[in-house]
Length: 448
Image (cartoon, rainbow, N blue to C red):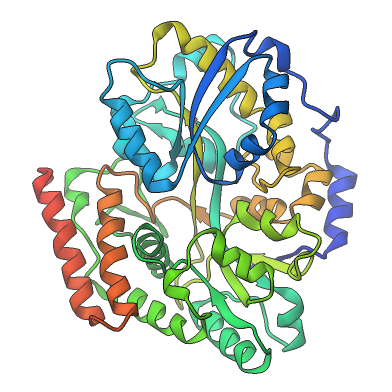
């Protein structure tokens, strides 16, 4: 099992000796050739990469040589805005942020970028394969990776060492380590995770169901993984009220015993901030959010964190769910603005800019060259850790399949399971109801 400790300077030295730097000049220089005095309109998400763009907005416009209009929204609001914008005759945005599993819902109103890639001789080979191909559907390239990153497990390596604990590889390891630390380390709970009602908990359920080697719909199995590229109507039947679903519910209920107070209201950055300040010994984390502590010199967790793929259920392979953000061009964009939109995609996803984002709070690199840069690795230890996980085959996307109904699956589970964890409903009843709700949606859509 791979694990990476941010205090492992030998790894950094090895990277420094073998990597080619991509940072070059202090400030990326594409600049005056990108916008040439024009305005670009971007609909983004309140995730690290767009938060960085907001933080360095003035410098960003100076680099681009024009105006960068950033409309940054929370996850659910962003989705609503994208769907509303798709109904307009003319798009209000030149670029939109798309989460990997949303391509199934959005593909009918996203531009195929292949003609632009071919016309401009664009080379996507520097992107990690799992990130680049994640936006490919029916031969179309619907986005370019900006901040794709997996949900992994971060753990306090210093605390684990103190109690003689190994890096968590399975659910049983998480629960055992959490109980040991919680019983012996004052003020520190075992594990932080997304248990807040709605999208947060719904995604938690299907990603942890993946730890049992199971997807939320009846997809075609290929080895230890599933076929995401050819999902047929018969594959759309839900698999929630199953042995894997019951195992997932039982694990989440067991996690409650080693979780901090208020866990049922915890989501996204809050879980990482609690971990950063020593409130829990482990946290499930989208890897890019590791900047919350790795770039904070006052955080107790800084320099004391190991990273492993999603711990699995006993006997199942370790798989971390790939998610995160791509830049796409809506089909209803003014045709005269397509070339400008593409130029901005090239710039914002360039190696220089990906490295620049890591300086300001985004510890993600979808590019191999940036992941292997010694300065980037020293700044964001989660990046080389994820790079290795990708190389070892620990990252997949099927846990959140890119189908139009993915949010309905998440919503049903996020509501039903919150009642279970709150003590208001049995897991058996909640699984049956979530399964029924999703089955109804699939039948309504005409899949079977």
